[in-house]
Image: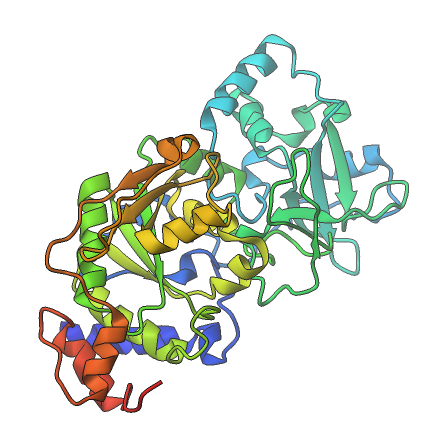
Amino acid sequence: MGRVIWLLSLFLFLASLHVFGAEPVDCSFLLGQILKNSKEQTKVIPALSDLHLSEPPSFHFLHKKVSEKNSKEERFSAVSELLLDQVIAAPGHRFLRKPQQVEGLAKYIRENNGGDFKHDRILLNIVTDADGKIREVDLWNAHHRFLAYRLAGYERLGQLNLENIDILVNGVQPWGEPWGHYLPSAGIDLNKFRDYRVVPVGGDIRPGTISLSGRFTNYELGSRNTIGQLMTNTMRDYKPKVGVYFGTFDPIHEGHIAVARNAMETAGLDEILITPNLNSIEKPHATDSRHRLAMTALRVQKEEGINLYTGDSSSLIDQFGRDPFFERVGQIYGTKKLYQVIGQDSFEKLVEQGKVDAESNRVYLVSPRESNGRELKIPDPLKEVVVLLPIPKGMSLSSTEIRKKIQSGVRPTDEEIDPTILDYIKNHKLYQSSR
């Protein structure tokens, strides 16, 4: 019965995804991209849950109306009684990657009567309805500093020095200039919010930064974190080690599972996230992503600590590369201890293309093929971000070989592909003709 319930929930979940032609997941976007296995062995997501904001936050207790014509002082007065904990964090800020900065900033603030940040002000945005009533008060930048004020004992916005703050209304400055909201694309559903501008990289602007209208609230953009919850997440002691394993998985076979297990054991990963390439550029004739997702889901539900990424990773990766995608995974799990599981051939190709950086936001766990015969040569600048995995003996498999066997009428063994996957292939008449 438990298995039937799991499969039913899988079908309903996948049916709601963008790859099935439905609208993208709207509520708690980041968490909605992960399908946990049925053993419920995941250690991380529940501990960093921000689902308490299941409905749009209410700011009805702020009675003053605000317009874009109000002065900075009038705007400040309207929100001065708001608790710092009640401000809504920007999307892509479920936790902060450098919590040590918060404590250092808090010390500076305590010792310097609130500190001097006039050169780099905190940016707040008040979003109103058509009548000027406050719908939401959002933080746009300086999340580390905002948390530092809270840690230093500040409770309400009115306690902050106005010279250290800029306050927008619907993204508009008091002198009438509209400002764009700079955001990490990793925290946004790019299939839903298409009217964005890509911000050029430079200075503090990282790859994958986009700009959207200030009339959107942080909640509408996908944030479910108050500053209070962000503080709890950021100061959490345990930071898990999470791997990401990309591939076409057409179909997923026992060689893939052996590599995943090998990576988890060798690197001491808490979890590994199987991430099918939904739009495979190098394999344009790959099986429909719906089938590859469903087959992968069937297999990983049997594996402790192995989960499935069900979202449209390609919308982020194709435009910005994989660094922002790993930033997204880090936000989902609340960690910067990230690893990419990759085959030797693919890794060497990335190195030749100059796409592996010593300053990367993850470590590469490189898996050689048993039949490869080539020693992996790691360039000196990359040795700190590359780990060579042991060869999983007897698992020199490929999806191409599996498909050829099925096409020729030969049933692959259970050691090559899980029987439930073969049943799915048979029921959906996959791999019936040569490609």
